[in-house]
Amino acid sequence: MPSNSDLIKWAEQGRLHIKYVNCTTTVLVNADTTTFTINDTLNPGTGGIAIRVGQTIMLTPKTVAALATATVNKAIVTAVDTAAGTIEVAFYEANGMSNSDAATIYEVFIYGSEFKKGTTGMEGSLEADDEIFENSPIILKDKYAVSGSDMAQIGWVEVTTENGANGYLWYLKSEHETRLRFDDYLETSMIEAVPAATGSGAASVSSLSNVGNKGSEGVFYSVENRGNVWAGANPTTLGDFDTIIQRLDKQGAIEENVLFLDREFGFNIDDMLAEQNSYGSGGSSYGLFDNDKDMALNLGFTGFRRGYDFYKSDWKYLNDPTMRGGLATGAVSGLLVPAGSTSVYDQVMGKNAKRPFLHVRYRASETEDRRYKTWITGSAGGAQTSDLDAMEVNFLSERAVCTLGANNFFLFQD
Image 1 (spheres, helix red, strand yellow):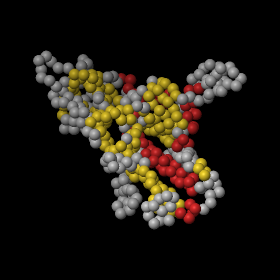
Image 2 (cartoon, rainbow, N blue to C red):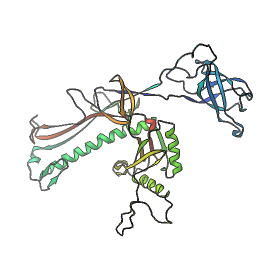
Image 3 (cartoon, one colour):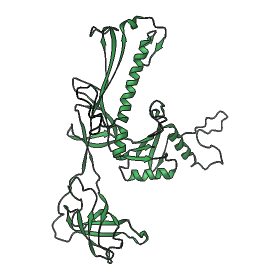
Image 4 (cartoon, rainbow, N blue to C red):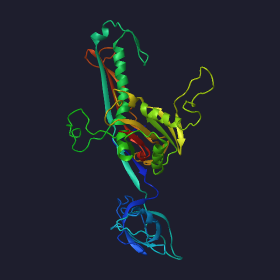
């Protein structure tokens, strides 16, 4: 998608309901009323806690010395001190607060409200909790050069390239491979890019140099910092995937997801799904099975459904030994990407817009399109732009990747 700014900004809506998971009180068992301190980060949409007088809440012990004696309490909020981050509550239960461990950490969420007849309305209001994200495009360049004299010599190797060029002009192959490498870098930079940290060597590069010094947020960086990471060995059992699914339930609960995997992880999933087939004993009984002597037994799966739809695809990048494949440290074995689109507020357009969860924005205007530029300079090969006795093929692109709703992504890494 095109963009006409040095900075790409978008807003993602926060959660509709807010749950606080670090609440404490000094009052012990059987208290009819008590004061809870909300120790979570304050709600950015209101500048304080998102609990108001008259709302009804559920309080659940999160850490308690004797879990066997812990029970759930429900209460109504009678006072709120936004500055102090505290709420006063009155319990609905006759015996008051059930838990007796003073060191207990509570989880609190709102489930409704209750008011008397003929009273005024709710005190205060809540603003939408938007989170603003941004990313900067980076400029990628490459160049292939061959002198006019070399272009005139006899080529002894016949070449046919993917762009249709053919003949005994050996330099065309080198030019085409430069183009292929540049195409790869356009994608891998969107995957691997990281922003230059303040005070880092990259950020300190002189502004007089032609070397960039700001970086960008690639997919891996965004998911590592704003998404979910499965660290360690690959998930190889239904129990492992149940854990992943439970995590997705707490996020956006996107129905369809795509798993981009390396070879080992792909085989792990195939084996996991094959084990679910109880037909036969010790044999392979899944795949294309038509009792034909020339049958083709398909030992792989393209996906499965367990709560959500998961489609899997081999990712060559993770298998390539010259790139991510075979890394001894920091290896990535897969990436779960939600399918479809999400609604965000586009800061440039000034309105809500549907955007794919993962997409690339490139710089463009009515007079300049920097999605993929290529041009020839010099005085050889048909070019007549300078007195340089050579042909130079230049490549340029300016782009950034936008990872929307990163909390719906999963990165599987060492």
